[in-house]
Image 1 (tube, rainbow over the protein chains, first blue to last red):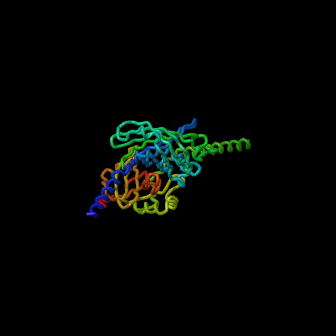
Image 2 (image 1 turned 120 degrees about the vertical axis):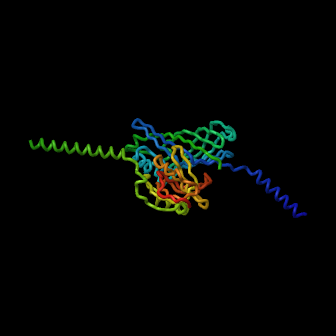
Image 3 (image 1 turned 30 degrees about the vertical axis):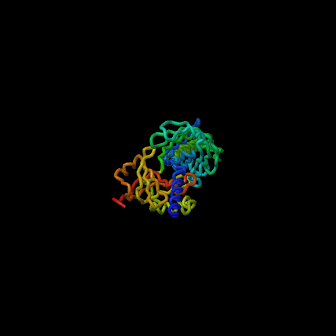
Length: 188
Length: 162
């Protein structure tokens, strides 16, 4: 009799713990597009990356982007080589750039209702091992069983220790480059 | 008379020099991208081996496989097809991964090679050739294992089943 009671209580407590544990729902995206755009009087330079991986945790608003740097593709092979070399992004030693941040207006987003929500994200972007704080705007589109994140923001190359004193890149690569990103998430 | 001839020769030489230099610069500037499929394969491995190598010692694996100008090693990887999807650039993406592996190899094909995947089924054993872009690792922020990334891929061998 006593044993049965203890067993029952244990079962109920276990069930409650399971039931009330916040759902650690995470959304994962491996379908992404990150565009790098630099514009100077000399020329416009664009590079595209389709291999970034990202996660969003709606409960906490945490957002993570992991960008494989060698996947940036330029029209000209020489530009791509310069981009990868140690003077610029040193992708052999820093193969990935990473953003970890949080959505700061989490209450404005209804993850269960289809729609486009303006969002504020603040976090740290690490490029070439140098981290800097960013506060950026973007949109989150909730549509059926998918979420899409869009954002455009500027990166000052010198903030991440990337600076050209002379040579062609110093005149042809802008000091501030524009990054445009899109990521489509599926629930995990 | 003789002096004039020397001056003329010098000018011609300078002219030829400028044209050659210009040609080289023009060629360098417009040099096409490396053709991965037409290039020699550096390493032949299976998906599990490559992932294991990266999880064991990522720094050593990066030194071995990545190139400082981005022209990293060309690999032929054999593995089991876990999924086939498409990216935002309409390129097909094959994940080579077996359930017992922590991470797989994410292989992006090109507009030219997409068709090679037409009859490929989940569970099929294939060998894919491509260039490595980054390795596999557990990422604490993503809270998951990241796959090895390969691009410019094509199939070099396919078996009917694994």
